[in-house]
Length: 259
Image (cartoon, rainbow, N blue to C red; front, side, top):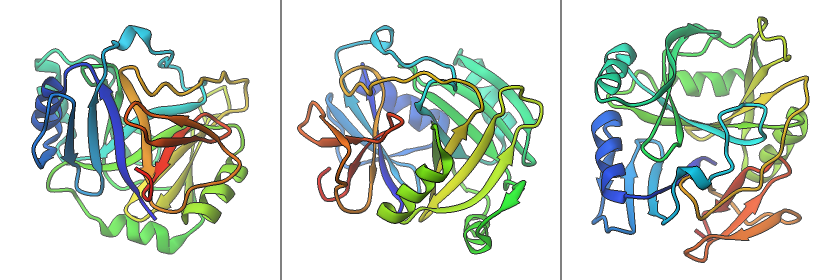
């Protein structure tokens, strides 16, 4: 079961439509309003929702040792060319294009309201493959003709517990790992694949901080998964009345039957 929708809060829906349409070639679905727009990202949708509060009120920080949401990743072709267009437009980068572990090329940058985005080019070469069929399905997606949603990255405490939970409840398969041998913090990445989408889970051997999700400020709000409502998790209510669940690491998600 995939991630089907990603809700991103923004202070100006039209500005964000223009940003995601221009730089990531997302396509508007239906008729946008000043309060809401849905954009097609090939394997999922990105839903933009208007909020009155700006980036400065968010408690999210750009430190991967903060648990919960970290970034939204898109698979692309021509990464360096796309990054050059972003830079020419004055978009803020946190990491310029480089060759990363796993034989991929990546870069990181912000959307207009401070949501961290990643572009990835190439097929990951995993340090350990745990599900050959899942990796084969991933590679069968091929080179995207336009940027496609690939993953949401989250920082967690316990990869085995997280993997078991999302496998049992939402059918995500743990397909492989990427190690970061030069990171003194003991950084490792696991890939939980659901449909054509991925939860990318970061683990560290050092202490991490926690954060309560914020559904009413600019930035990532929550993901929408396919499946049944969970039991035993904390709950929040989004401004539009959607029930949002919060896992032990602070990752917020709704489910298809409710969102």
